Image 1 (cartoon, one colour):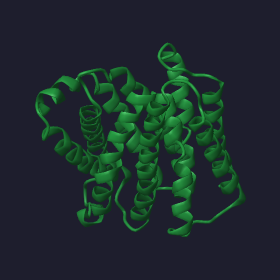
Image 2 (cartoon, rainbow, N blue to C red):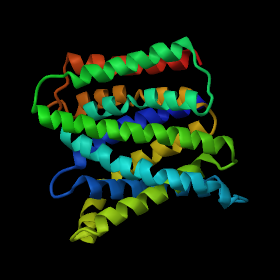
Image 3 (cartoon, one colour):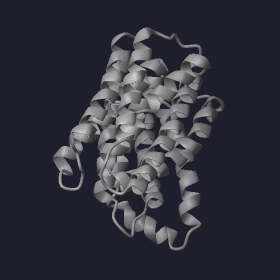
Length: 286
């Protein structure tokens, strides 16, 4: 079940990057897109929690770590992720974010005391190699590519911290995955709303973005529901590498839907394959 949930999260995250790119056009910006997407995802997860009767008998005191985690991931991280998609496209953003298992595993082993295996080390090296290959990619404006990569790495770091905090909180409480996801998305929506609504014409721009990002919100909701349910059942060093296969899904979906705007060459495909291979190696020896 853990593997299926993590794989579902990966597929959804990969599709999320592409749906955001399809809808992200001026005058809509990353902050507005992030707010609408996160809000709709939160509504979806709350509906799942209600349908599953997860709120019944819930000890709300145990939910605070998920509310806190949501402030920076997906709060701040979603803005960085969406900006990266707009700058370097969904495929390259997903590959850079796919480096997060390296950071997640390092934190999990050193802080949470999770076991360190040879497969974990080799898989981590493969993921790092994929990220380095993408960084060394030629083509386009160097400054723009570097900026987009920096945004993606920033999001990856926040995702890694989130993964471990969520797993730590899940081990010490009985909060269902759907409720945990709802809590994080709720606090993330609040953070992004403050950023958006303090700017001129914030409300009008949010209304304008609601319909274009409806699909993104649904996909995002599915991804977070799967992700938090997976962390509720399995270790970070298992779930995070599997979620990193979002890189492969983002590239494959981009080939189908964005082949004209995405420069998908051999270097990008190899980078995605290395990231995915690293995740598969780690999960295969769990």
